[in-house]
Image (cartoon, rainbow, N blue to C red; front, side, top):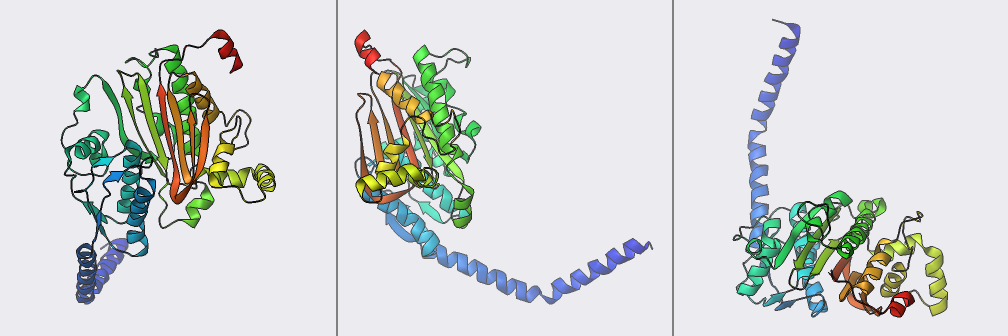
Length: 360
């Protein structure tokens, strides 16, 4: 017999004897693991979804509920069951944030989140059409938006933090079927500015130090969804990440500006004030020339649109910009992990008087 074959045979025999000697111990350990998993399933925390899930209409209760999901799983080590029986309304941006939280938990701890189907037909229909069930691997009915010519949908999707994956699938909202000719020169301008802004958001969402500090819970993933209402020629795009948050990024990379603002206010600026600072022209966390234009260009196009808004939620700050060049920011009572950006833009350019156009 070959020497190599003899050595292999000897090692194989030793491994078989070792497995036989430890068989009873391994079976006991496996049984204990199964008991532990079953006990967690039996100890699921029953959580009733609020009647109105909306960051714009019912922010505090909505965020408190979403945060409670992750706290129950990662801190209390409990599994949860989401009861949708009382939920009468859920907004599109809240659907994205909720799906992100559920997906993060279930990727880290499989089957840690289960739930019931919504009893209200409107809620079920909306979640199904947006792709909520499909993203989470839950059985759903066939979407009907495919048969509705007045609505185009970019269904809810998650992916790694790369701009190419983020932009994929939204071009048809702005361009014709061949992907070459935009629906109008204005829609082409919006698409280019929007993809730049989305690429910037993805690129800086998860810095290395944030990943290291949050190894157990961090998932470097983005989530996006969108609609186009053809009868109103309006596009709604939603982008969400669970990263470091825009105010914290700005604090790190624009220390001088923040210190200047702090000395003026005689206090540490609120996150909402940092968001307003981040919207200034040319503001970029990379400090690279030519970057940081995405958000400013989007605001410029919103001003040119017949109607539109830019809404940003990031940690404890909220910033909303309107097409009449009016904006406001406010502090939030509870933090939103990461950054949520909602663009709503009409693809019809606003007709202005020549003098008014020059003034802008």
